[in-house]
Amino acid sequence: VNSERYDLGLDMAWEVDLFGRIQRQLEASDADQEAAEANLYQLQVTLIAEVVDAYGQLRGAQLREAIARDNLKNQQSSQDVTTQLRDAGVGNELDVVRAE
Image 1: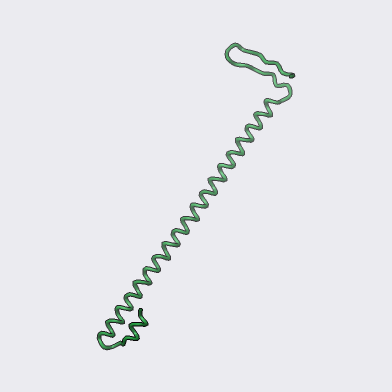
Image 2: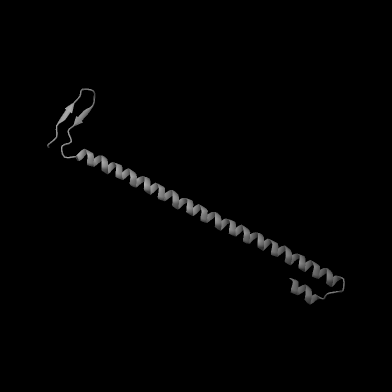
């Protein structure tokens, strides 16, 4: 091994880095950290996109439900009016059946 180790007596040690091994290890560690940060950022972007998509689907479903409820109310109102017209002698049973 072409390195020397010096003990400073303060629970610290210093190693001569003749061939840049320590520097390469630091660079590799930095690269690993940058890769982990990039992965975290990508995960955050993906999660946000999925939340936005799910929210859009929820709002669409809520809108379709509101439209269906309005349609049901309108059909019930139409049936009620048709029944009242039949009862008043203006309409007939066929009109009531069609309104159902």
